[in-house]
Length: 242
Ligand SMILES: NC(=O)c1ccc[n+]([C@@H]2O[C@H](COP(=O)([O-])OP(=O)(O)OC[C@H]3O[C@@H](n4cnc5c(N)ncnc54)[C@H](OP(=O)(O)O)[C@@H]3O)[C@@H](O)[C@H]2O)c1
Image 1 (cartoon, protein in one colour):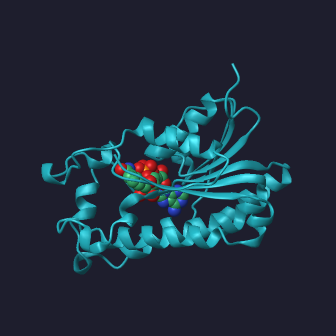
Image 2 (cartoon, helix red, strand yellow):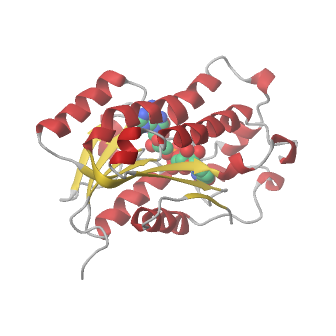
Image 3 (tube, helix red, strand yellow):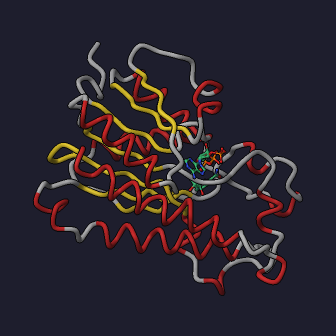
């Protein structure tokens, strides 16, 4: 049976993550080839099992030398891509409660920089280093958070996470600026941003019951939305809430 990704190549950043891992498996299951990028070698080995159509690479998205080297290796082996997915973030198991309990006064010096590093600088680096490897009419898809649709004044008082909120909004702005780039427009490369509400993942484990959203998206649904968006004719900018 023909798969929807037969004959395509997809580059995935954040491939060891909760969402990234499932995206990789779904695209492989639909007949696509995947170049998965992990933060380090250990992650690459521990994540998805070795499969014939899966290439594993490791690279820190904040390191331009590492990204340049990886992009050059693709160029040298004359490989180009139909899709580039950016699902880099920091939502490890049980961390939601810690992230939402810190107000700006209690953040350490590094937190805002880290959130910007993975959500904004990393995306800009990846855009700059890899877009020339995308085929005409290809797609860039960024996985973001639907928190950006809410004005600060509408957020519940217990939900601190100001650093995450600010960086996610900056990422949304960056996507808008990427969409204006001449090179992308002339090659008809679409930039999709799908911004999800809370997802039923181990990230929420151990949270105070009143901080657990009454309705959450299921991971399968999230991945299905991502796969469908890549196949849609018109690039999308969607907030998806449960
Ligand atoms: N989970 C949710 O409920 C939820 C809801 C809405 C939106 N989102 C957003 O969706 C995106 C992905 O979420 P997720 O749940 O899949 O997060 P995740 O499980 O933490 O996965 C993110 C992946 O990115 C990797 N990464 C972090 N920094 C990196 C760097 N400098 N270079 C390369 N890779 C790096 C992480 O590696 P390490 O683990 O080694 O750092 C991890 O494998 C995030 O932007 C998140 O905010 C998540």
